[in-house]
Length: 557
Ligand code: F6P
Image (cartoon, rainbow, N blue to C red; front, side, top):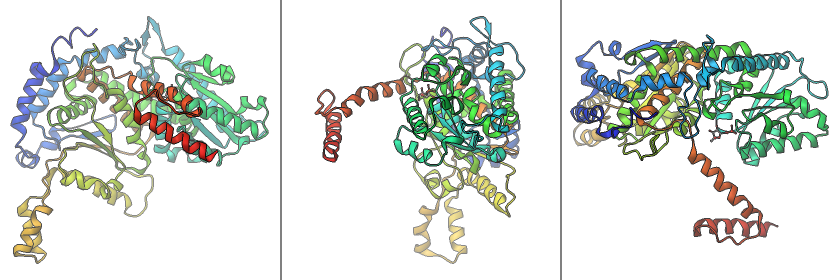
């Protein structure tokens, strides 16, 4: 399967070498002069699809840069890998699985085969079950054990079984407000997270969703057991569990063994990666909150982007362009991180969600064939919504020593027509990308200080501090309004960007062995914390820390 793409060291491939040479030519070029030279730059380097405008003109690129980057993508056979994914081939090589989150939102129902079998009937059947369940809960037909309707939903899950649902529910709050449901997301094994949520809900009116693809994740199972105990301790009998606990899992048998009735288990499949699962039954809390129709609009928005990605030539392909720009800075300019900055309060969990999507997917050090990479893969993804970030870390973006490429994301229209708020928000949004790109040179600083009445040594002493070098790259993504459809398209855009980068970096973007090891180590240490010590089997630091904990526990009794 790897025949074509790994036959030559990536960094020795003609496309890579040409980009390295081109980077040297670009090193002294300032984006200011690129804009001054070409009044059509915005038009040349922007495109629109699925109601998303991507302006990538504020990047350190020329047409030649883009041509070389597209050549890199062709060399990596991005088109071939894209086809393999949509065809249901087992491109997750280390787990020997297909990668088919696109099937979950395949609204045209084009047959998609895994092992020769069309998966669409099963996908549609689960969607039908979700629709029926959502209708019953939202209409009040589904009642708690004492006859009261459901008022609170507690999703118990972690990673992909948490981040997607919570991010979307937050993003689409204007659509969930009339659901009559309070949504809670319990993820952390920390008992404080569990207790804080249980303190807010009433057992008679609460629905717990145990969400776990594997149904073996320690955090989720422990939290679910604690909720079950709390529920039974409240006086509800065992029989009441059927009215208050449902589960979403690819491991239906394990969910049933846990005590969830077969009718209350919503299944999905091993070809849905955890971090790509919000489109599956893992999206149940979303559907409960915003309603099934809106959930289907979310799927439709993602499907629209899937079709754009699947059918558009690389040169006009939005996810491909974003992927290539990321690689340009990551691998040729040494950028170590990438900021994702939504200027929309409702998107306040987006970056956390994308941290998992990007870093769990492409935070890899070996290629699909097991050979180590000799280039950088995924950057650190970080960011907070604007304008808060401007008053925290933007100083470094403007004048620090590190290059941090950034994606700025905003809706043209807000849900709240509150005076000047949205215009002010957008003025900051447009202003920041302009300032990062344009900067302020010494002559401009001098003129500004002189106009303010300053002169001589006093003025000169301040100049270097007030110079902003500019030439700092960003992408701008604009959507008309944050709706289920535009959100679906935006998320699928990032998923495919991640896919393309993984193909070029030649990594398996769909496994997560590092995370698995963390789970294993915690499992080994737990019995030591439950014993009386001392512990000597680990390194001196770990032995010492465990000892410190045990001594403290012994003192406390
Ligand atoms: O963080 C590792 C991981 O395996 C993720 O990929 C997944 O989203 C998360 O754990 C939760 O796993 P599960 O849904 O199986 O409980």
